[in-house]
Image (cartoon, rainbow, N blue to C red; front, top):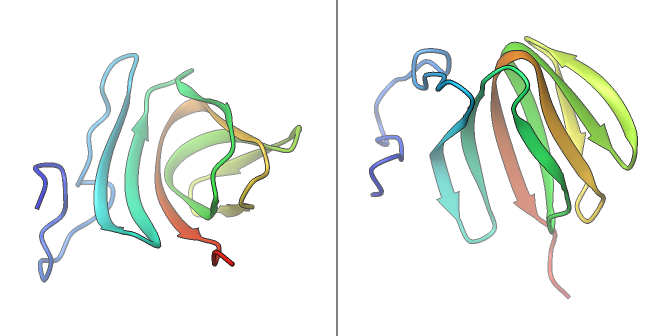
Length: 112
C-alpha cells in the first residue's frame, strides 16, 4: 500500500482525512484499481486543474467549499454536498472558488 493510500477496513471521515496546503492541490488515493479509482483532493483557493481529458467517467462530490467545474466549455459552480459527472473523453477543468475538498470517483469506459 502506498504511503498516501487509505487503510482498508478502517473508518474515516473525508474532511478529516486530508489537509489543505498553501497554494497547492493535495491528493490521496482511497482505492486504486486498473478500471478506475477513488481519490480525495484538497484545493487551496484559486488552485485548479487545467483543461484536460481522460478515458474515465468521473464523479466529483464536493465535501467542503466551492469549485468551478467546466465541462466542454460550460462552467458550473459546485458546492458542499453537490456532485457532478464529468464524461469520459470530454474536456474539463476545475478551479477553487474558495478552498474545497472533493471525492473523485473515476471509472474507465469498457475498451472494445
